[in-house]
Image: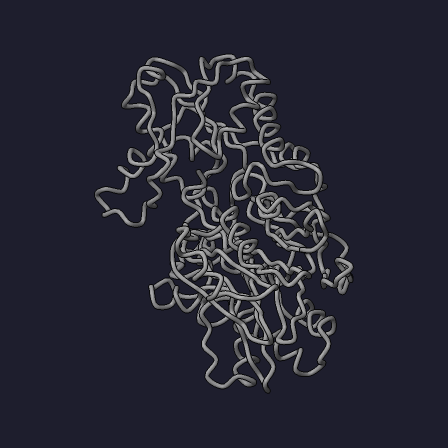
Amino acid sequence: MGDQLRIACGVFGAINFQKQSIFPYIYWGLRAQNHRGHQSHGFLTYSRGKFHVHRKLDLVPKIKTNAIQEWFGRLPGHIGIGNVRYTTSGKTDEKSLIKGTQPVTASKNGLKLAVSFNGNVVNTFQLKKEIGKEFPGFSYECDADLVCHKLQIELTKSKDIASAVKTCMQEIEGAFSVAGITEDGKFFAFKDPYGIRPLCAGHSKDYSTYAFSSETVGLDINSFERDFEMEPGELVTVARDGFQREKLVNHRCKAFCAFEFAYFARPDSRFDEKYVYEIREEFGRNLVRENPDIVKDADIILSLPETGNDGALGVHEESGLKWERASRRHRYVTERAFILLNRERYSTIDKKINILEPKVKGKRVIVTDDSIVRGDTTKAIVKKLRKMGVKKVYLFITFPRIIGPCFYGIDMATYGQLIGSKHSCEEITEIISADAVCYQSIDGFIKATGFRRDQLCLACITGKYPTPLAQKIADEMKIRFLKGYEETRRLYEMVEPVGKT
């Protein structure tokens, strides 16, 4: 369950060369990716040199039949971008969340630009100072603001999208997958030089419409064919004859986020040539191979729905144990733990997950889950199972032990909130009152993805970050944390960059 983890955003953008309304494609592309961001959503369309914008908090709404024409009128145009967002940067009060809703726009010397962004910027302080000089009174609400305004500055200088994007790739540190529109109707997308966050491209079967999407499910729901996953450091523009690809910055290796495979991506999304659910099933098989003694002692498998289900199937297939489908998510209970009072914190498990006591009582149970971050949710699940009379609780965790914060778009940005940063596997087992906590090995995880080690960002499980400032902050803050320093904010949002300890 990822202990209620959040990722930054989901991106979708499309252009139709028959000049038909693009809004339906953007709408459904975001609906398919709403799992990537529940806090807010936004649509932006382009028509006759103007941007038309709708931004709101909460999930992408259902549109009633009698309101469809109103939406078409509000968002005209044949080019559009959209975004669903969670907050991993900026302030989290309601006013700031509304201001930070994407897509975002920037305007300078009469030139306008709009972008939809997924990722996280590390060198925020440097960029805020630079942007403040060009945009007096610049208000930073989210990292998309930084990327959009930096790109606008460079476009004003060069008037060339490739040159402007290349400078951004070289001077912005962090993860950024971006889809954008210029005021003259150029439609483009680009990835950071490490390709940390996903972004793929596809087209309609009649080749009238071309699109960018964080995940392939955004293409699938529109009946588009997937063409390719964008490469690190690549700029892609779109013309009537299709995608124009240009590699602007080369690095020795890419660093695709490993956590996409374990938790964030929808099971029916595809990265390269593998579907995510197939990879998660292999995670389960790996855990059986790596823990044969525990498998011999277990009676049944129980999964924590829904991200643990694919791993549970793999455990079942490899071990022969029965996968008891005795845990179900209350589908329409979507509230997260933070809305509850402190005394109600554990009751969120009962509100969100129903476990059938007669099916697990007296059994030795392997529980499959995707990850342990803070440990609170896992501890509550174990406590619930103990109350039901479960004889033994063995946890099979598909993502290796998380030991360090993320700087690239996952909301786990301090050492203090990570149970694995200060406790061994054995200590975690004791803290959450399980009989064993079995993490998948890093080597097993990598092999199952089909990627090489030097193609993945494994920073949160190895402590080795792909970008230099992130590595510096992580190393210095770890020393402070071990000395008892209290982390009051996300590490990359400290008042000043980390200095000497």
